Amino acid sequence: MTPRLLVYTRTTDYRHDSIPDAVDAIRGLGEFTVEHSEDAADPERPLGGFAAVVFLSTSGDVLTPAGRERLAEYVESGGGFVGVHAAACTEYGWPYYGELLGARFERHPEYQPGKVVVEDPGHPATRHLPPVWEFTDEWYDFRSSPRGRVRVLLRADEASYEGGGMGTDHPLAWCRRKGSGRVFYTGLGHAADAYRDADFTAHLGGGIAWAVRLSE
Image 1 (tube, rainbow, N blue to C red):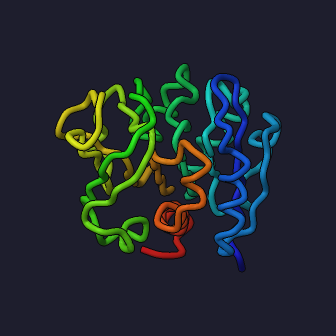
Image 2 (cartoon, rainbow, N blue to C red):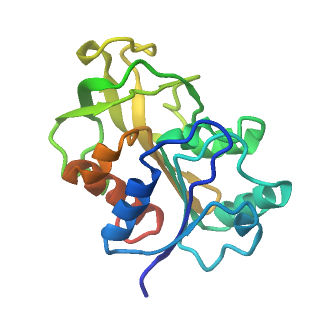
C-alpha cells in the first residue's frame, strides 16, 4: 500500500511563499499519497492512518492542545514525523515539540550560496549527494546543536557563506527515533527553487522514506 502523508502547512507567523511548490514537490515524488491541510482541527483526529505527519514550513503555534496530545501519542506509538525548514520555528511554547524535533530555530543570515557537508552518506536522504554539496538557502542557526541526541546527516560549512552563527559544528539535517516513531528534519528548503532542485527533492524524499520505513 502507498504510504499516506498528512502534509501540514499551517502558519501563524512568517509564511514562506514556497509552500505551494513544496507541496507539489512532495506529491511529485510519486512514492506517497498526500493529504494537504492547514486546518488546526485535522491533527486532532486519529492519525494512525498516516505513515507520517509532515510539518512543511509551519510557523508559530499551529496546534490546539488536543492536536498536541494527538501528535505526541502518534509519534510515541510508532508514527513518522518529518519537519522541513521553518518547522523549527514552530510551537515554541510546547517543550515536547522541541525535544521531538531536536533543535529550535534561532536566526539566519541572508539567503545566499554556501556548502553543505555530508556527514552520513549511508542514509536515504544523503546517499545521492556529493561529499560537499553546493546549495543556496537561509542557513538556519539553531538555539543549540542537536548533536548527541540525533543522527546528524548534513552540516553547514560556515566558511562558505557570510553570517553563520554556530561555528564548525552546525548540523543542518538529522534523524532520530522518538519512542517507537521516527523523526527526520532538514533545515533546508526556504525558496521555491529548492523544490525544483533534483538533489534537494531526493534529499527530502529520502528523509520521508526513512521516516515511514520504506528504506533504511
